[in-house]
Length: 256
Image 1: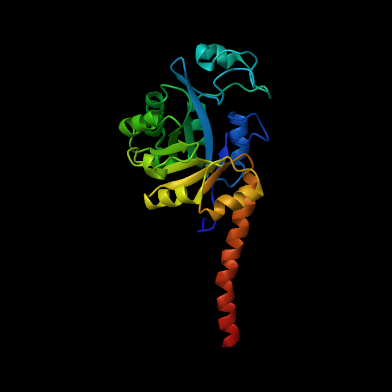
Image 2: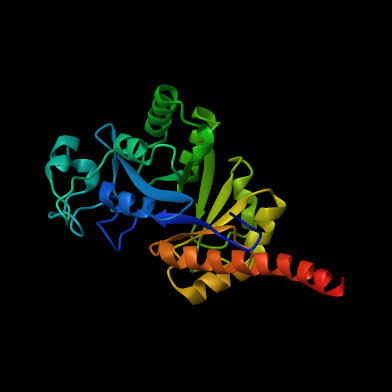
């Protein structure tokens, strides 16, 4: 149950503390929690949307090549820590099903048209809902392309700074949400976003103190590597609301 004080929880790249980020195993672990959404990153690799964060090999996969310079079949043969393959967007769509919202961040160039095609196909074949998905990017041109190609899917605008005109960049994109960096988010941009009708989500919130800070700014939700942190926070806030509702009834009974 969401109240005015609880926060929407996106599991950031699945649950990277329990399995390698952006893998089916990490997403499976995240789905074990009462989360609201999953966030993944995609790249156009040889005409296929591959779920991966980094633009270059070296951190999770051996090598140094650019992701976009590798054939999809070659990339899929490489094993990540834990022995998993790099998944495709379709595999993630099938795993998530209709359980939670899915935020698909377009990381590299030329992802928008492929994402639109993949979502249209999956939604048509599986009776899914457009409202379950959120397409986001730091590349606002691709967000605009998504508006033109698949307008029924919500759009998230990633911001790593404080624009001079605050949340205005979301308007031509007909955004559903603004996704703010924890390093730059401020009450003014969240308030301006709310005036314009945008949700505000903050990435990546893993510490209780940071969680309290963004909650005090009236953020609507967070991206986190620690879903349990958000679950505990929301449970506490819900309990407080319930207690406040019960207390006046108790006073009334005592007065009677």
